[in-house]
Image 1 (spheres, rainbow, N blue to C red):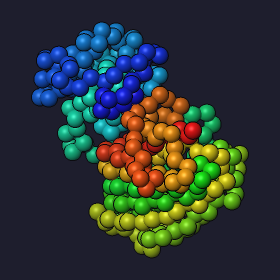
Image 2 (image 1 turned 90 degrees about the vertical axis):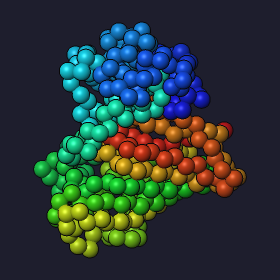
Image 3 (image 1 turned 60 degrees about the vertical axis):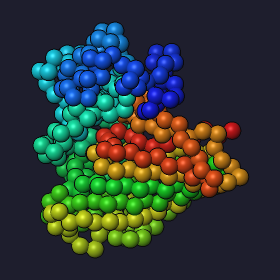
Image 4 (image 1 turned 120 degrees about the vertical axis):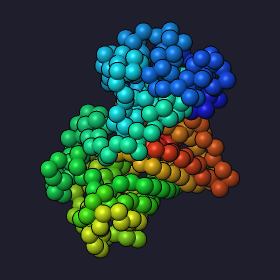
Length: 332
């Protein structure tokens, strides 16, 4: 699956490509440029010849569960997708209907300004199997009440920069994270972060080291799930509107060859940059920028990335989440 139309897109096992705006019918092109969301959606569905039932099935493959009646309301203009909650569904629609990336998202974009903050997605929304419950139990031990849905809710993510370093054995050895946040209201004085190791990880040996703007508080681990939750404490309570920048690093070389790195975004993040630094003597065969609605869903965006002469591959995501954003890695 791709964002820019240059690489294959997989739908029901068949390989096709996303269309550029120039390749679409004139009426659909005009609707995407100047029209309303429901009109563009209705034309795109008709152009691809999909019934709402088939469209719903394609969305389910990408981890997006949505009612046929909701799709009907959307294409008739009786309802508008709720932002940011519906962003993964709208991006999945772009993928299934083979539209350029953000072609439909921009038609609902102005609602981002008008609407207040919406509740974040839960771990059960984004994680498969028992992982949602495992993470929520760890957060509960750290006092994430009244529910884990509300943890970090008082902080708006303005920017996240992750840098992941790999060794010559293709293992992830370091994750360095820098976050820029803004307080939505008076009082936040901490941030809770969750780390999932690669297969084979010994989570009890994983270190978390703080740098700028925070210090380590309480920490909880689940060895069976290779998962660690950590409380990062600020040196003061933030006032509403305060900008706070903080950095930390996770050191872990205990896993096997890494399949890549994804950040789980429960809420919208205005700017997300992830950089993978490889040993120059052990470069990957392929790196793919991906966006997923859930960890067990097909990507709604997949774009092949270059690896520069220094062994670095970078992926940038604007207005990311809710969902997973990151880079899949394939080795020789």
